[in-house]
Image 1 (cartoon, helix red, strand yellow):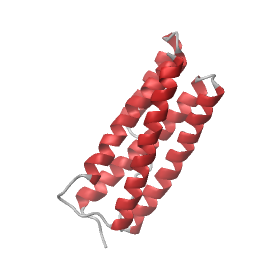
Image 2: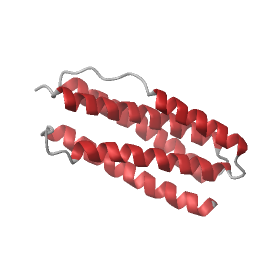
Image 3: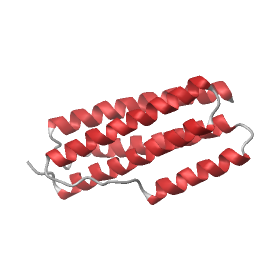
Image 4: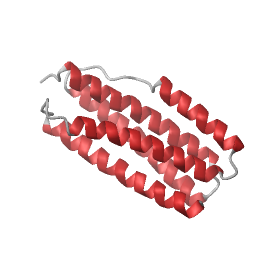
Length: 151
């Protein structure tokens, strides 16, 4: 079975966002001091690394080539994170705000694919995306909780 070009492009867009999220979480973990928040961020970076591998496998399984790096937008976002970490009085809160912003964007992308009625995803793809979306939603809630605790 082969994905349509639209589905393939959307999955590769998710993969790029996943690379960006992994890099963002890694950067945020380097910038915070709180051990619990640092561990949360490191765990999410590892989770996004695994998400990337799962997405790549799914893309290849259906006869397409996966992307192999993040986006220029992601590079700019991380540069912004580095900048704000140097000027912000509450570095941890700012890092969590940026994590939250990134998670909302990627969640919108997952919803866009899963809620689209124009195409039918293979069940393995749908199951994978639903599982990842739920994990991202959970991470978003946890990051909000940590942000409230440090503000």
